[in-house]
Every structure is written in structure tokens, then in C-alpha cells.
Length: 220
Picture 1 (cartoon, rainbow, N blue to C red):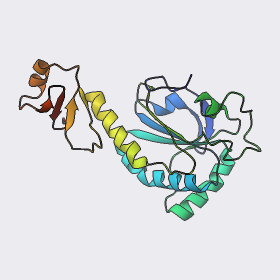
Picture 2 (picture 1 turned 180 degrees about the horizontal axis):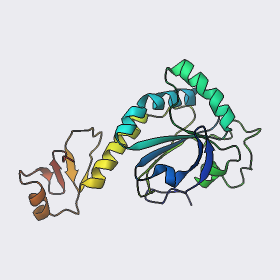
Picture 3 (picture 1 turned 90 degrees about the vertical axis):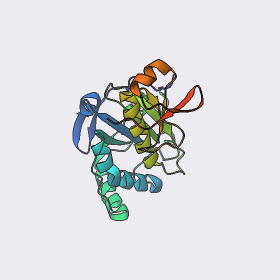
């Protein structure tokens, strides 16, 4: 059975470009992005890792760590990182997990259990499903999961937007509407009665339908 939103993110210990980490300990009391790659020295992933390095300050502002994973070894990651910095203009400034035995790829159900025990001889095509993004909250639960085809670069601005939404809705009884961006109106969730909403929002709300109640984004 595949991992779902609100499942606990499986814990693991792994070697990374920043040393050995225990995933849950490494996440700590903050948030984390775990994003995976089918193979080092692949073109689309090269652009993705560089872009994430450029966004790292935005994730840091939100108390969210970044962790990359590829099925190749840490030594290959170090060499690949040089190419990423040269071609993308950003040095990789977050850890990259080495997963040459495919343990974490299988733990997160990105590869089947019978995929073998080594990345040797495998190609990006045989690892095509190792192109996922997991957003993990302070409770170590999965808040978002995405899997992309190899030919399509991932939209990490969207992942940042989802992080903003998840952090906001974890603090307030609201949801964010389609294409929501920071500072825009939000929706009072159906579980909040009109009576409770009036206490929270004494200035009222906009309601084109009784179940669709818009209010300005709450302040932290």
C-alpha cells in the first residue's frame, strides 16, 4: 500500500554529503522537503537541484530543511554537485542522500521491493519512479506527495506555495482556495460554525454561498 497524506514519514538512517543522518532527528521540530532523483548526472534533475539551492533561503525562512536523494553513492553526488554549480549558478547547499542499495527508494515505495539491492547497472529509465517530492511536518507526517515524469522538471515554487498553505492552515481553521498566494483571502473551513467564525472574524466575511466563506488571511 502506498504512502498517503497524514501517514508517518518512514524514518531511516543514511549517508549523505553532510554525513550520517537520522531522518526524524534531522527534521527536528521543523518542516522538511525530501525530493528524489533517478540517477546522478541527468539533465532535468541537474536543473532542479540548482533551482532548489537558489530557493534554499526561502525554505529556511519557513523553518523547512531540504534533503535530496539519488540512488547513486555519495561520491557521485559530490562530483555531480560541481556540475550543478557550474551550469546552474547555485552550489548545492543541502544534503544529498546516497542510496546505492535502493533502501530508501523502496522504503518510500518509489521502487518495488523486488527492484534488487544495488543501483549498479540500473539506468534513469529503470529508476523513473524515483522522482518524488514529500513535504514532512514537525509531527513527521506526510503533508504533500508528488511524483513527476522524468521529462518534466518539477515546479518548486509550487512546493513553496504548498508549504505556506500547510503552515498557515496548521495554525488557523482555514483552507486556501485555488491558486492562492501569500496575503490573499482564505476560506473558513466547514467545521467552523458561523457563531465561532463571528468570534474570530468580527468584521464578517464574504459568502457567495453559505458553505463558501472568504476572509482575509489571518495574521500569525
